[in-house]
Image 1 (tube, one colour):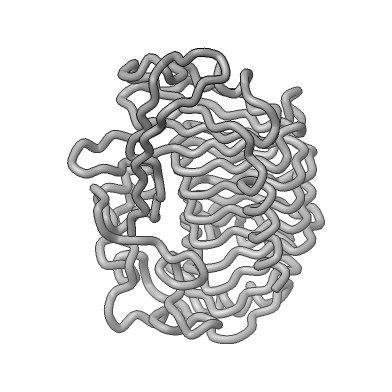
Image 2: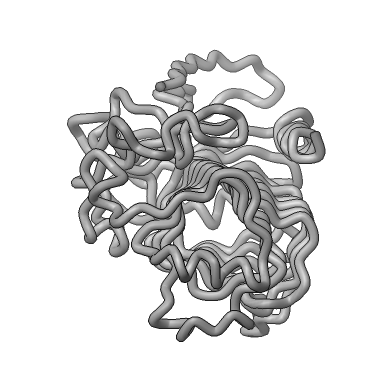
Amino acid sequence: MKKQLLTFALSALSFASFATIRIADNNGSNPGNYTSLQKAIDDSNAGDTIYLKASASSYGDIVLNKPLAIIGDGARIMKPSLKTTFMNQVRVETAAGGSVLVGFEASKILVGNINKLLLDRLTVTGQLIGVDSNGNTSVSWSSILIRNCYCSLYANNTTISDLYIDNSVLTTIDIGTILKNNFIISNSILLNLYICSNVTFRNSIIEINWQHTGLNLLNFRNNLFENNLFVSLENDNLALLSTNSILNGNNFVVPSFSETFKNYKAELKSFSHDITDLRLVEGSKGKNAGTDGKDMGIYGGAFPWGDSYFSNPGLAPQVPHVMDIQTVSQTPNKASIDVNIKAKSIK
């Protein structure tokens, strides 16, 4: 219930009162749009929305310093053109609390001290990392929802309160041992779990990097594991894991990712996701084995990933997006303006 209330609160905060919609399009096809995303951000007021058009060019580095909704066309949508909405480094500052970031690809997202943030349907090819503008990694995150994302998470000096990760693929996760309150990861795939404490893992598929940790149980303490698949983990290590953490429900051990997913390739860890299909194989122990009776992994739970209309159907979240907005570039002061909007929600 608490998670549902958080989801509702973030959505209401982000969309209910937005006064102005801007469009950033660096294709240069419409003179009425911004070609620079940063310029669109600078010209916006708190609560505004910016739509990003897919492009063959990056929108560059951006700094987000006010609460906005930034909604991209998505990463690798619109088969067969394979256009994507992408940028380089995204810095989310404290004043941007209440923002919503949806449907784009970034090389890195840096998040400082923040209260209220929704990250939805994003691909981050570098790191999603807790760090402020001064390079300080001792930051505080509260009321954050990450869903349908594909990233590496580094927050090992971050104090966390109310962080929920749903239906996401985390290629590396290093979240340290600092006290966390209500940090829950559900229906996700964790490909390289380094260090974690004070976290609830539920209905997920988990690979623990024992070589990195050296079986140091101080790196894994006070966790709760409920109904998960542990990949490439010996049964005695699973018992060892329960020394400092709690294992509830059905926690299974399976030999490898290749025997878990329909088409798994190791390149997934380096974000070569076109060749990977992360649906569970028939007969998998994770089928209908979640705490909710649905599949473990990203195709179960509250926000299951969609399949169709994408270039890579096995690893493509649903991305509702604006297909086209046409306006005249200029109009007399206080005159009416005709706007034609075409939108599509894809599953």
